[in-house]
Figure: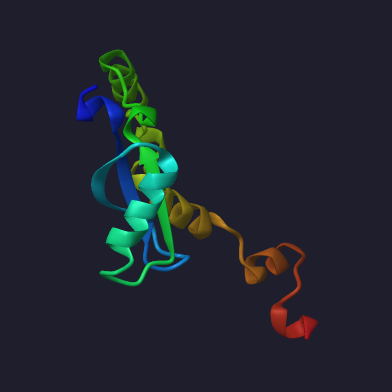
Length: 118
């Protein structure tokens, strides 16, 4: 039995604090996932403080196929989410405000002056 066949490849990730994101650290060879976790703890925890360690069998990691990557290009058209297309609204709002009737003008319709009302 070859030594490569007995061992599996594992990827190790860690978090410095409970709120920090996971960071990739290194790969290691181990016979199973329990030994891989112990090896990661022994190698990693001696070097720096750590809040959590994740050990993942490399064969369980899946990447996108070329066909799946093509779908990303189709989904990349998100121009409608950008607000730069609504720049005309400021001008339109200004025109609307200028066309609004003020209190003085409305009161002048009834023949009442603002000074007489108070």
